[in-house]
Image 1 (tube, rainbow, N blue to C red):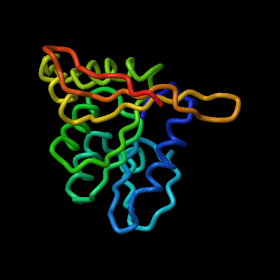
Image 2 (image 1 turned 90 degrees about the vertical axis):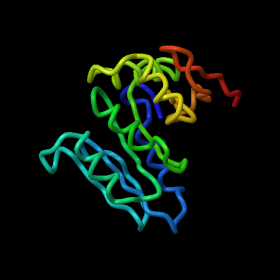
Image 3 (image 1 turned 180 degrees about the vertical axis):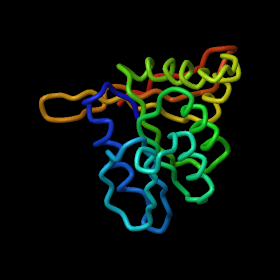
Length: 167
């Protein structure tokens, strides 16, 4: 999920996470508590409350072996940790980033994940393998609306390859 601050990324992520199967466990990981998810089989890890980084909270969350990770407000080095956490897992994870568009989200993921010194080609390969869709939202007069959907198809060198999905 991607969109500018105030666009409704958190609202849409909360709604999607609320639709995860009731029989499956979810771990919600945030820097500060923001998501409003109504489900039983859920554990919430909040970095700000525990005095650890978001990256550390993500690493702790992966040890809980839930079927779904819901990670909100990624930026910087924690992006690499989140992408590594969902790589090779079953589909069904939600990651939230703040940016202006779905295309901007992909470039933002590349730049943020590379903050730790990883080469652009490696980061593009990771995103091409770990991310299936990027859904961008914008806030309109009636609330958040989907403004773009990209299907990630892999990578070519240092670029993530994708195609726009009509909706």
